[in-house]
Structure formats: C-alpha cells, structure tokens
Length: 338
Image: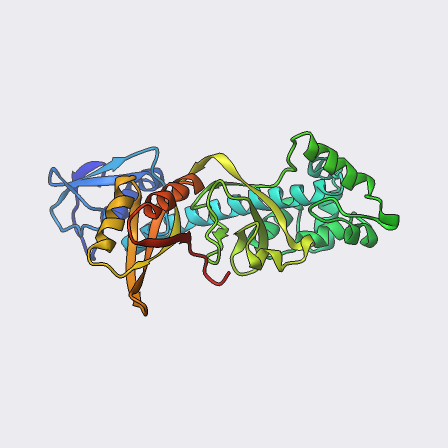
C-alpha cells in the first residue's frame, strides 16, 4: 500500500489512518484525509478489499486523542499513542519550567542560574529525579510540588513572609523584595507568570465555577488530578486559597480557540422571547451551543445560553444586546458554584 494504491488482503476492519501508518509514520502523523476509489471519504470510512486508497497529507495536521477511536491496527494505535505521550511530556516540561520560574522570581531567583550552576540538578537528585528536566516534568504534571524546590533554596521564614503581592514584614515595613515588586508594578511592569496560549492546551483546565475568559484577570493553581487549574482572580474558590498556593497567570495576546460561557437571562414569560434572544445573539456572530428555558412563579422565565466566545469583550456585547430587548429584566454571566 502506498499514497495511491490498492488495498489488498484486508483481514480486519481498517480505516484510512491504519493504512497511512502502515506506509510510514510521518504519513500517518499528517493524515488529513483520504480518497477511496477517487472519492473523498471521512476518516471513519471502513476500507474494503480492492479499494484504491489515496492518503491526503497536511503539515498542519497531527495526531489527537480522537484518532485512537478511529485507528484499529496495533501499529497505528501505538504510533498515535507514542506521539500523544511525547507531546504531553514536552508540554508538561514547558509548564513545569514556567511554574517554577514564576515562583522563583518572587524571591529574586532565576531558574536559568540554577540550571547553569547545576544546583537544580542537585535538588532533583535529592528527590530521586535523574535530572532537573524530569523534575520540571513532574511539576508540570502536578505530581510534584514546586514549593518543595523553593524550600531547598529559601529560608522557611522568608517563604512565609512572601506572597503574590507586597506584604508587610516585621515592624510594618515591606521586605526589600516586596518593595522591589511594588516598584516594578508602579512602573507598569507585570510580574511574569503562566501565559495561557490556547483553549486546548494539554495539562491546563479552566474552572467551570467561574468560566474565565480572555480579558478577565486570572490566577492558577496546581492540582494532582488535572494539572494546572485556571480561575478568575475574583472567583470565591481562588480567593479561599492561601496566597502561597496561587500561581500568577495571564492571557497570551495571540490566544487560540474559543471559550464556553454561560449567560443567564431573566425576563417576563412572553411567547417568542426565547427566539428573539437567540436571534440577537446569532446576529452578533456568536455561536450558541446550548439553550434552555424554565418558567418561574410571578410570570417570569429564566433562559440559559451556553455560547462560544473569544474574549470578555464579546461577552459584554452579548450582555448589552440582550439587555436592550423588551421584557428582559436582567442579564449576567452565570458562575457555577461561585
């Protein structure tokens, strides 16, 4: 079998991905589509003996978890899983580096200096990691606390005094490092933190309780279950955490993808109002993924829209547009469990 050839001797059900990986790993990793008997078919298409198959590659295409549901042969599944594992390790290492670098800066320490001096390697071996790279991977996966690394470098009293923002030290005076951060903030320089670049970044999840959107201030925290969990800075769950558990975070100006937000609209119970509200949202070019309505006492209704948004500015446009509809009483972003 080759990019354009005859699929022969099929002993089991196979899909285009299976044949692409049978030819070459790179062809499988970049399989964007397929033609069977000169006709474009979905990648879920089941091939039959005698089919003439052409794999359509694309440099922009790469394996995703959904491919495991399509691939049948052990070779294809192994290659896909290997790619996913490799990417996950790479992302966890990058995330662990960002997290540790952010926290070290609170104490005027530089990750690059620790790596260059091999001090971080020594700390890694103390915790049974082969080197600092494995240590960073574990931090990114949420399997090892960055605070244990900080504790090897900073006195316990100093760790207690420090927090994400300037805090008073003994005698009511700020520490030298806190004052330095305050001066940088006054000059318009924001402390470095985790930069969210995509809505679908591996190892990063967004709090369903507050549904953070680009444009809103955010913070992050590590969890053993899901890696990095991002909340709005004013989310009650984030505010309830101890300051030293909070990781600084911000949105990339080149953020990719759309976020889900839930909008709750209270109105009088009028016929056709749900249709009018849905139409108003659609006119703004906003996709509605789910819409529900329930009636209340006193001739009122609550409509809940789950929409896909790029940022908080789009949210504000939707809220503003819905607020102008006759018989609408209130419109707000709905936060679960907040």
